[in-house]
Structures are given as structure tokens and as C-alpha cells.
Image (cartoon, rainbow, N blue to C red):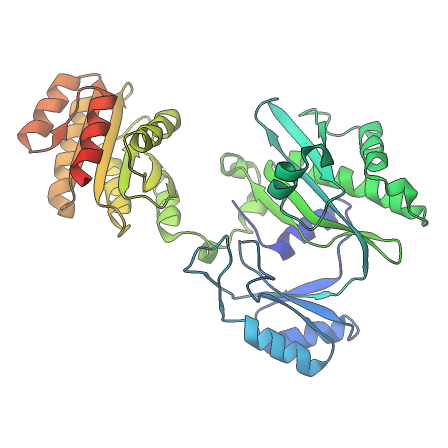
Length: 388
């Protein structure tokens, strides 16, 4: 689950990191009111959407006077902001953050995420702030410093201090820079672990000319599987920012992620779903989605999954790959046949069933006119060949 910048900064502040003063608003009049509350300083008017690259897309403007604030807020609110992360369709801006503009002396990068190779969270930092971390990693990987975090102990004081020294925070004239930097790095690690985040990123982490260290931007994502432990985080969800099909799938208890291909995939089990997408690509096509119906793929869930897949106009064919462990293959087959009649499926459907009652399941599907493959390779090749 993603949240907006202003929500991320509120959480960072809660855990001890300093952030610029600001307020999120959804109207021009509220923008002016927020500017006045801040003491009429120079402010940044920042579009609040779940995507990066807002400045390049015209979603961040500086303003000094009431007229400037009105103009900036009026131009950003209601715009469809297109960035490299939104795709060509863009995102509708419904809120802006009115935030004091800060005088930055030096920018750093800091983030906490999961290192899958090490099997633990890591705190990453770099002196090259304000840039995409992927660019830094490609050009100068040595510039990225990493500290592996203990999943229970988190970051220990000596680790935060060592990282701050490695970044050079002790070299600034103002002594408080080092202290505030250590506090901020610690706050990122605590937020990540205590709120079950999947990413906490501050870019840039800014050292200001007055000696303060602030999170000039903030991005926090959360592990959906842990949200039951954090109703206060679930309450931050902005459903308008989510893909409608993904929102519908979540309400139906399905795991769905929309992709850009043309073959809709319906699979039970996340690992099998990943393998299915890989083999679709292997045979020369692109998957239109990740969709895991779960281990117990009952008739209603199968029908709902197919309905969500078919809502994507890019889908030209469907590949169903079911392992009958908990669920019986014949029951899945009946669900697919019923869904075809109910939904009026017109695109070609290719199916691979294996497991409990697989022979009976294949017989039901073949009699209903579906293309069935006995092996994963055979079924995937058929699914791609139909489109070609």
C-alpha cells in the first residue's frame, strides 16, 4: 500500500525525523489559508499523487505572494499530471501540499527496504541525493552505503553513528548536523520496522543552510499482508489513487496487479503465478496481469477473477494455470465453464490443470470447447500461439 508525501512526512515526524512545515489542502482558498498560517513565506506547492517525477511534469511550483499561491494551486489542482511513473494516462491531482521552501546546502539519499539476498532489512544512504537511486547504482555503486538491520533490534546507535560519519555529516560547520542526521537515520529504521513498511525513502535528505536536517521529500510503502496489525495505516489508504481492478480484486480477496501485456493470467499460488508469467514471456508474449486466486479456487472466486481480467481492454487471450492441491480440478473446471456462460467470454482461453481429479477436470473443459494443455510448457505455448 502506498501513501501520499504529506502522510509519509507526518509518520516520519512521529518517529523523530524533522520535516518542513506544511499542510495538505484540496482547494485554492485552503492553499492561501495554509500559506498565511506558515507566516507568508516562500512555499512549494506540491501535487499529491502516488508517483514520482512530479516536478518535471509541472506538479511542483514555487510561490511567494498570495497571487502566486493562488495561481500555482489553481493550475495544479484538478490537472491530470503525467510523469514517467504514471504512464501516459496520468493521475488526477486532488490535493496539494503547501510547504515552506527550504534553503538546502547539501542533499543526501536515505532509505530502508528489504534486501532479499541477505534476507533482512537494510538502511541505504548516499551522498548523491536528489537523484534516482537506480541511476546512482548504475553509475557509481560504491556511492551507496548499506547497513543490515536486525529485524528485532533494528538499528543500533553505533550503526547509525557510523553511517552518519561515512556520509560526512561530521564535516559540516554546525555541530548539530551530525546529531540530527543520526536521529533521522534512526527514525527511518524505526518507522520501517514498527509499521511493517516495505519501503521508507527520503530523497533528498537535506542539510539546510541553517543547520537543520530535514526530510525534504518522503515516500513510504507498506506490506499489505501486515495491514491487519495497523488499522491506523489502513486508514491512510487513498482508493482514488489505486487501479480500479486492483481495488475490486482486493475487496474480493484476490491478489491482482495490472501489467501491460495481452494475456490475462489466472493462477492459484503466488509462486506459480510468477512462473506462469515467466513462461508466457518465454514463448514470446507479455502477461496482462498477476492474479493469484488462492489455494481454494472455488467457483465464485474463479468467476470473479475472470471478470476482473476481462475488464482490461488489452486482454486478447486468457491463460488459466491451476494446481489442484487444496481445490479439486473438476470443481475448478465447472467454475470456468459456468463463468464462460455467465460472462460471455469471447477471447480464447487456454487451460492447464494438474493435481486432484485432473483427468475429470480436463474432460469437462474439453467437452466445453476449451484448449487444454497437459503440461505447463504445452499449455503456455498454445496460449501464445492462439494470439499469433
